[in-house]
Length: 162
Image (cartoon, rainbow, N blue to C red; front, side, top):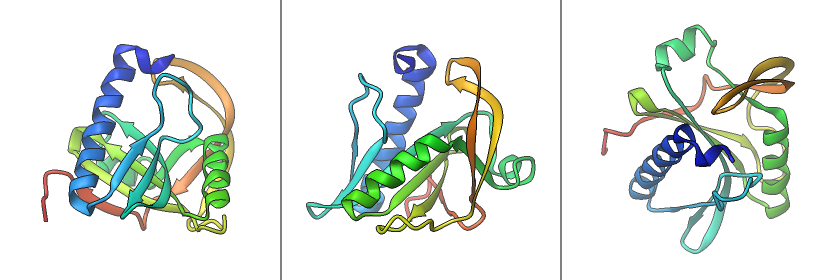
């Protein structure tokens, strides 16, 4: 599994650091799915004993917010199948699907609601079949990818405790 590689372990540590910040900032729980098995979603958000959302999280490296906004036109590339599956799970549980894009080098978190509890999209998503990196460890894959519009995402600096 990719999580067992050095890049996978770094990404997991960075995701957990981001999750800890979220938990402290918003007084909620970021309950991750088991990492020793390929889960469809990355985590569940819980507050006051109630599920609040299904989460898809990605850590990105060597990517500044400025480069993301200009070179990538504020569009988050993610496998469409992952997004579809996360939305389906969120809808079946009656909670929103939320995306967290963590720009690790700048310690910036972009948070975007992807779908409403009823499964309707909350954000513009365009689809395209493209060749992209297969996994965190490399390789190539041709698949349908979602390009999620992150222009209206909430932007948090994890160094900022306000």
